[in-house]
Amino acid sequence: MSYTLSPQTRAAAVAPNTKTGAVANLNPWSLVPPLGNLDAYISAVNRLPMLTLEQEQEFAKNLKENNDLDSAGKLVLSHLRLVVSISRKYLGYGLPHGDLIQEGNIGLMKAVKRFDPDQGVRLVSYAMHWIKAEIHEYVLKNWRMVKVATTKAQRKLFFNLRSMKQGFKDDAEVATHRDALTQGQIDSMAKTLNVKREEVIEMEQRMSGGDVLLDPNPADDGENAFGPIAYLADVTQEPTALMESRQHDHLTTDGISAALEELDPRARRIVEERWLKVNDDGSGGMTLHDLAADYKVSAERIRQIEVAAMKKMKKVLAAYA
Image 1 (cartoon, rainbow, N blue to C red):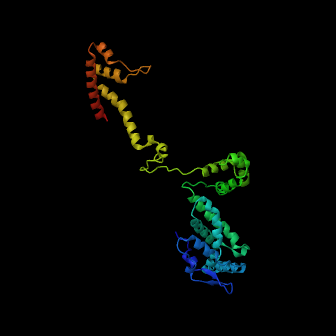
Image 2: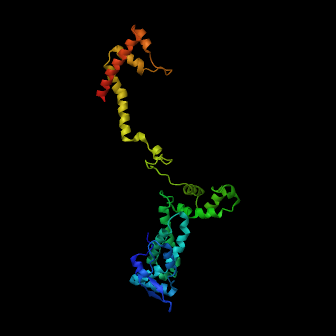
Image 3: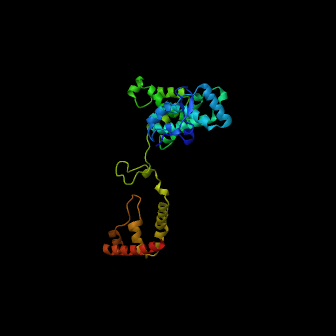
């Protein structure tokens, strides 16, 4: 990963003249540390000269009136240390410091482009908003796989909840409920940030939870092998399942009726009594011996008739399907 500046910005690199204190143009590569060396980048940034009010006004007017990129570069370079300072406040979200700095630099460039020197405000005050906004957007997009804050109130809670909880660490209530917010703390946060207490509770739950892999790796035979997709999926609406269900219903209604029509009355009654009849108490129909006594034949003969009837019904059902 590179923590260098864009070619346009590097082309406008500046450094202090040790004798006069003026700003002099340098070879842009003299500013850039080795790739991936964040400490060298920060050290180089902190050595860049800060502009006086007069220099800042001059460069800003030159940029606004003449679209001078050299002046824009000098404004950007002189405020890179501000980006480094602001980005340090967001290290607690577990994102690379270099990425935070890069996003902050984008915000700084946007601020320089829109800065109006006639408003009587220093660039450092104006740029802070743009730097933080760009870093905020990056944090929200990359802190979790699922975006945790979308509304203005949620964004406000996301970037203040953790620091406010830290402020409660010496509270007597936190001693017994160290990981959970008390009702008084929730009310205090809601009042301070001018949001609903329900929104405080919801954001606390979002930030205390973690991402869960919806569809785990099939090769994983550990505790993550069974993911939410296994119980969240509605298999009843899966096209193949729907077709199978309709075919089953078709066979158990029209198909069975057509198959029974192919049997003689005795064979049909035997099949119905043995397999299709259900009494009110949940028991089935007649047994082989009951049917044998009714038809005055042996139970084995009833079984043979049943087997022959089943074979005939299977052929009808196969053709019906």
